[in-house]
Amino acid sequence: MSKRRASDLFVECLEAEGVKYVFGIPGEETLDLNQSLAQSSVSFIPVRHEQGGAYMADMYGRLTGRAGVCLGTLGPGAMNLVTAIGDAFLDRAPLVALTGQADLERMHKESHQFIDLVELFKPITKWNARVTSPEIVPEVVRKAFKVAESEKPGATHLELPEDVMAAEVDAQPLPRRRPVRPEPAARELLKAADTIRNAINPVAIAGNGVVRAGAAPALREFCRATGIAVAETFMGKGLLDYEDPKALGTVGLQAHDYALAGFADADVVIAIGYDLVEHAPKHWNPRRDKKIVVVDSVAAEIDEFFTPEVELVGDIYHVLTRLAEECRDVPHSGGSPRLRSLVEGRLRDAAHDDHFPMQPPRALYEIRRALRRDDILISDVGLHKLWIGRMFPAHEPNTVMIANGLAGMGFAVPCAVAAKLVHPGKRVVTVNGDGGILMNFQELETATRLKTPFVNVVWENRQFGSIVWKQDKKFGEHFGVDFTNPDFVKLAEAFGMPAWRCEGPDDFGRHLDHALTLDVPSLIVLPIDYTADVAFAQELGHETVTNT
Image 1 (tube, rainbow, N blue to C red):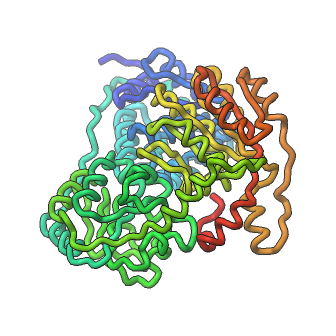
Image 2 (cartoon, rainbow, N blue to C red):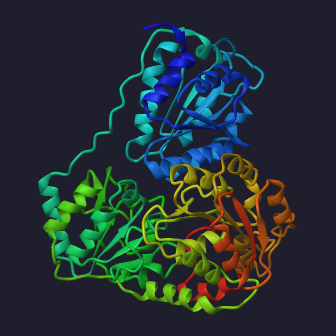
Image 3 (cartoon, rainbow, N blue to C red):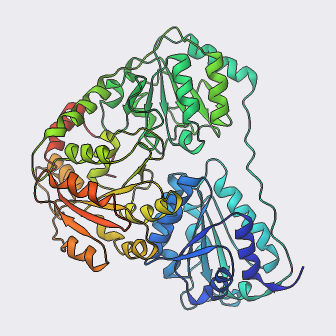
């Protein structure tokens, strides 16, 4: 071993973890770290705002299961990471955030740009630490990645004081180890199987945990073997092909979802990879009268509406496979096709809807038509997200990416950059409201520079549409929600991107088909009419989630 800067050792540890990209903005306090990155196999991706870099790391973690890495300098640079780190924390995406910091000798007093970042990030990370000595670098890096990637995954954070990173050290990275997962006891498996076999109307709800575990094939076999139907959360879209007769559709938006999907009559609910962050169980177990069988990677969070009869904790793929063997041909099955039929019927009817400005179902119909079964749609946050979560049909998991737990606007554009880096052969489309698109619009420069081609669709109505809807329902009027827009076509062209504005109902499909053939990012402005929301909402009951 030979002595070198702690920053060199730190980057060697990143390489040992298999890190391919660090997304961020360099600063004076990260000079040594960035120089070490420049001499490594890790690609540093300069972004135009730290939040954009953290969202890229967030999406990288979601799609790969390996922690994405983002970087900000001290003070304002670090604080700009907060929203996207919170998103990774609540949506269970593995992410390691790195922040610069002042020298250790400045931390006991008031000092320029010094904020205690460890305390600041503590509520939105699974674990974080200040690197107070060069000698601890291998340990803290290994722990940061292990904790971030272990179930349930999420964000971790390391604060890197400038003088520590510049100091000499003689050490080596620690070897990477895969997280160990438990297995349920045989008696628990048999108890769960008895509960399911003795049920009159069993039904399942599958969520984000099944996606993370790569367990969609096991879930599909479980449905085929047992005959039990499955509803999906927003983040579980595509776990069952929407054309599967056992797919009940996406639940979690409005009061009648679960009743229409048959949950009101269910006596046993199998919660598979289901997270309370995704949607509160009081909406599908309001009378607290259902027996709940949990299949998950960690012990269940408990509340008064979610008290499991039995928990099967372990590798979800393996547990589902064993449970399917024990429960073949369950004599009864619950669930109802009413929700699915209503939503799919609305989408089919939209194929020939010539309204303009376009209504959401026709827009989603055109996107589904243009994308292949494993292409990716990324939704920003706003009223359009509720339409996508409700109505957009998915064939495979990780093809409809939604910010659910924290749900901050500005998610889609930077996430599309990361999606193309992970899956360069897949087509990627973002859907944004005109209220959120400008929040990280600057990352289109990053996309153009990296030559990551994806299509940005902007639904334009010059309002914060979801807040308009809620204010109108509650007060009979709306206020503080109207704004003007720049010319998005000219703005996109200023970034060197092709862009189009739709002037009639047939323009969108034509522009979208063309844009998906290009090898550069592009943008389509689509005037949208949200009045269809009101009628559709009346069919499905009041909302049970916020606009996000």
